[in-house]
Image 1 (cartoon, rainbow, N blue to C red):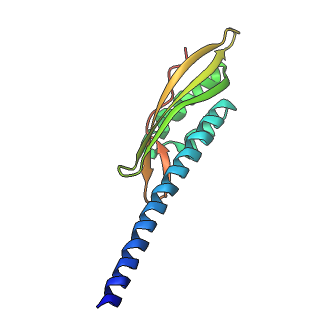
Image 2 (image 1 turned 90 degrees about the vertical axis):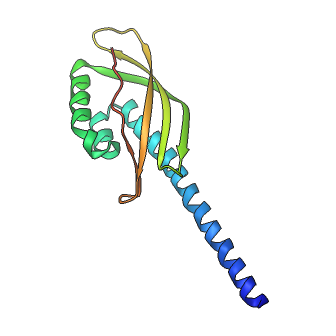
Image 3 (image 1 turned 60 degrees about the horizontal axis):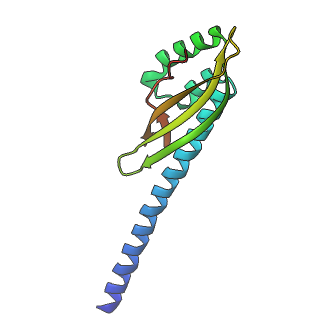
Length: 137
C-alpha cells in the first residue's frame, strides 16, 4: 500500500516538474522571439522579420507596410524593450518597445512606442506576432 502511494506521489511530482519546464521553455522562447524580432527591425530587416515572426493571416498587410516604409527611407537607430509579459497559461504575450528613428530627407530623430501582441502556436511550437508595424511618421 505504501509502495503504491509513494509511486503515485513520485509520478505526480514528475508531472508537476514537466509542466513547469514547458512553461519556462515558453517564456524563454517568448523572450528570444521578442528580442530577435526587434533586433531585425533595428537592422532594417523588416521583410525578414515579417516572414519569420508575423502570423500568417497578418503577413500580407505587414509586408506591404514594410515595403512602404523601406521606400520612404525609414532608418531605426535604436530600440529599447520597455516591458514584456508572457502568459503561458493563455498562450499569449505582450511587449512594448520604444524605437528611435528618422525618415529621409529629415535627419531629426523621433521616438515611437510600439505595443506588440504575441501568440504561441502549438503546431510550430513558436511565438508569432499578431500586431502590425507602428505608424512611423
